Figure 1 (cartoon, helix red, strand yellow):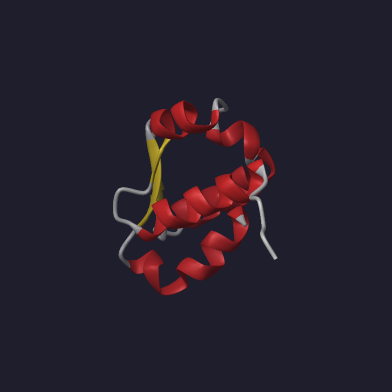
Figure 2 (cartoon, rainbow, N blue to C red):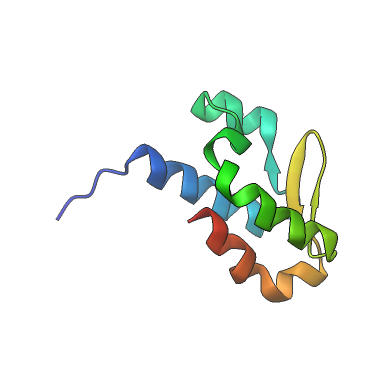
Length: 83
């Protein structure tokens, strides 16, 4: 059967793909694509994501989030926040 992605599907797919790449999720690109701010959509996940940043598994600044090299080992746990 033919499946049409919902807005949520498209966002999850974008985030999942971006986090698999070194550059991660670029907030400006995300906003251009979805017309929403990343952390407005994922506000409930922000605190848990911050704990990954604190333990060196991810990075976050004003412009993007990404998974670090050491975070790649547990990347599925991190990515599960956003799907």
